[in-house]
Image (cartoon, rainbow, N blue to C red; front, side, top):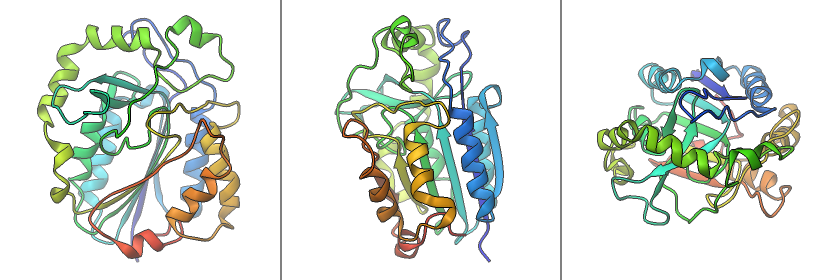
Length: 281
């Protein structure tokens, strides 16, 4: 029988020391991670959960690397992320749409989309990977962005007035965080330069269902994020049947026009995986 591992990341705040004094307080990301872990357990996955301070960049990337080292052809990784999405300037030339790399905000620094793509290449051919990303600008966070994105809320002060809030790093803190850590973020891109063009190296099949399109923002909530809440409603405690594309479409059709989840498959062809009921071992 195939083996399933899952990793569930939820951050209700980040470390102000890295993000220019901003803690990015959200309400529902830990709830999302808890709900996704429960879903995974109901399907027979071995689960790992990283909440807020536990969800450092090293902890998240090491959990993915550990899964890559353990899973064999036919096995599956289920990865969910709920938290802020951000951007850093693209320094290796693959993001022509907006000249920015999209990021997940880990507790202590941002994880750049180039890093995520490089991690997928560590999985053996035939491994299945499903990623759920309830964050802003997440339409193709498993690879490169394909459309320009709108400015998120310009300042942290304005973001703090929103209820519920968008899961986006405010523009003033985005700029300050990058400028205060430029060597770190430029160095990350130097180490994984060109990964966006290495699909031939990706033997695994990676399916992303995101909280919104590249040029949209994802809304937080009180019990779950808007995307995660709708996903759970459609899932119906496992009553839903259909393939991943149909699951995405069922969620997307129930979401507002300004937050339309994306479906983005990359990697080696795996028709059997594509056609399975979601979260099948």
